[in-house]
Amino acid sequence: MRLRKLFALVLSLVCLGAFTACGGTNAGTSGDGEISVFYYTFSDTYISSVRSAMDTLLARQGRAYNDYDANGNQTTQTEQITTAITKGSKLLIVNVVDTGSNDTAQNIVDMAKAKNIPVIFFNRSVDESVVSSYDKCVFVGTDYEMAGHMQGEMVGEYVLANYGSLDLNNDGKISYVMFKGQEGNMEAIARTQYGVEDCNKILPAAGKPEIEFYDANNANKYLVDQNGTWSSQAATEYMTTILAQYSEAGNNMIELVIANNDEMALGAISGLQSSGYNDGSGKTIPVFGVDATDAAKAAINAGTMTGTIKQDADGMASTITTITRNYLNGKNAFEGVDADSVVGTWRVNIPYATYIGE
Image (cartoon, rainbow, N blue to C red; front, side):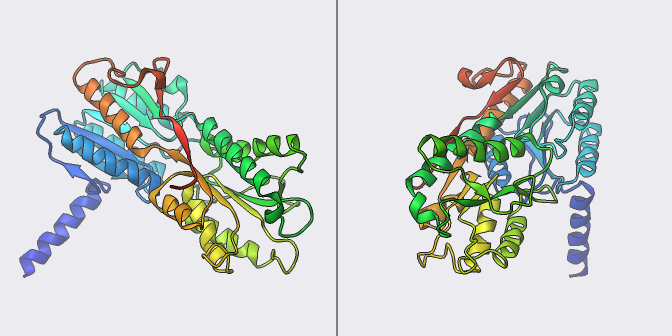
């Protein structure tokens, strides 16, 4: 019994010492060495979907891989990458934590280039200048501005079609709250801007007033997750605080929720449900997100959420693993990748789609 406990303790310490590489591993059969996959956090629902799909595809290829969880900390991720390179990693797949400047990603590229290790950045934006500085580096992501445009159009069309019923305060205007995932992140910036801007192009063209941020004293016109993790918790806490001051009884109720991702949208719904909204009783505030996670799709089909923009986790994982195979086999990185999705020689954009239920 004591030996078993000792073994369990040693195993847990090994996992910890490997910077959570035990989050996902496969011994592999190909003999190509470890593929090191670095995630900004395992707790992000969309990223978890990508990770699950990628684990399956890498294992199917017979690749040896390790998944690393940075838990939102760039210092941790940089240490993980340095260790993996030292141990002889053959390829780096990186969902970088810090997107606020080019320095972090460039440092990763420089370390990999010095050892002739290919790098595939994904999901979280990396500048073209960084990717193009190394001929064995690509980025797999999305046209992040398109998600904002599509969400804005979706919101605008919905508000226009339901204007009368949405105007709970009977003031001829629709009051909204915008939840932003992170400061300095290009995806978050675009979604925050276009999610409102494109909506407000549709409404005046049809003779309706633009939607208005609920708090006239907030110059930013958004509420941001201060931890930069695009979390449901942040949105729930914000929503709960808002509803303590804004209500139908006070004639100043929030009438529309727009969120940068589904996690924040679902967090807002949780806060609304605590006040008797979006719980199936008939009182529903429209809530829009981005990602089309399983939880969000379930909420939309249950009538507690209104719509989302699908970010294709399976498509992203499939593209990344195709490029991985190409690099390890000495082929062109984009061989077998949909040519319409390839941008220049440095990136692949996975297309979006709207989702409003089945």
